[in-house]
Amino acid sequence: MLVVHSSSRCDVCLSEYSWEDSGKRPHAIACGHIFCRDCLYATIPPLCPLCRHIYQPNKMKRLHVDKPEDIDDQKEIDLLQRLVVSWETPHEQLGEVLEEVDSWLDR
Image (cartoon, rainbow, N blue to C red; front, side, top):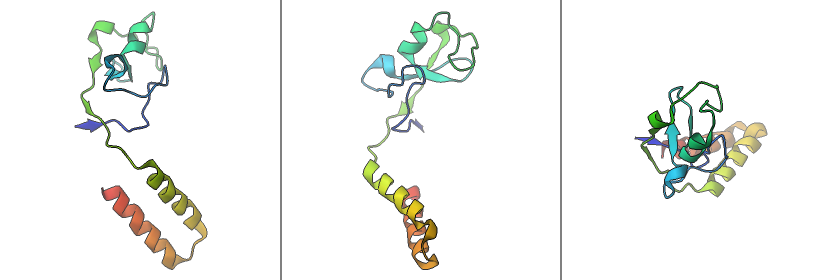
């Protein structure tokens, strides 16, 4: 099953996709671009906001995706900061940071 990243947003209204509000769930149109349902219904004439390809509102498809797990954003930020700071870190300490990154990516 596809998972929408927690920071994914509709490119039209810039709102996060929602699983509680059916109008804010991600929908795909014929060109393959994805927006929330409300924005697609509100686009007149029905042209893709990104590529301007015409679409039929009655043929857009709701994406069946999993809601993302709550990600510990602060842990992700801390890890990224350590990785950036480690650019000038001695080789021995860099190995520790890379191991932590690998274990984080494997979860």
